[in-house]
Length: 252
Image (cartoon, rainbow, N blue to C red; front, side, top):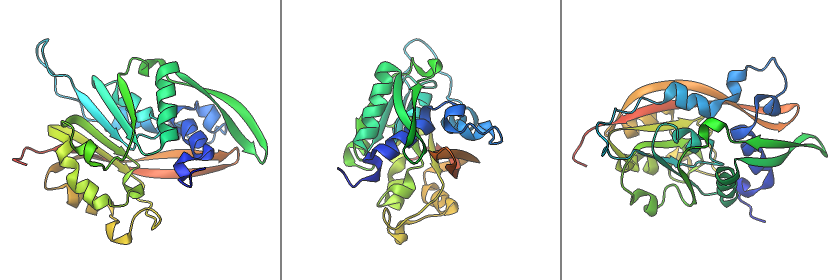
């Protein structure tokens, strides 16, 4: 068994539930606001900027890249606004699950209630996302093969940077992936841990903006919460700082 936490069945189940679970499956307690249970859809509807209108039938196809896509929900959401999306994640089990969801539109998981008590839940891809043209790949989101690609209209790094070994270097290179006028979505709770990143690479939200500033203009910023269910009566509430940047024209 891999010692990578994102290859474990526990993490796979928790993330599938976060990405595709119905509100009542994630958290049945009605005192929890329902908007906390639609994280990825809210990034698309509340944070993304409208794409420029394309003229003529021969207009260039729009493309998006979802770095650290996990089990794929935001990749599918991006498929509602562009023609083609690539999702990349280092977890092979996450990518297998995302591919299965793309192929079959449903996955059944065992959700922990307490101790040895589990219930079976069928998770389905919403119908509005089933026409998305998505491709999922297992790989390093910071790897040279990623940065060798042609630039995209949208690049997303959702809750990724605080799990990278060299996040400052990654942020410094992101302009290479975004077309001038395109947008970059960086979301993070800034939960830094030395197990993933050396302290010299840690950034605040303001420092993140400063690293990106030579090539990007901050266009939108907001705080979006989400819940990760551990079992029926224990949850992680995380508040992600979602920043949307526009790629500025430059010679680089």
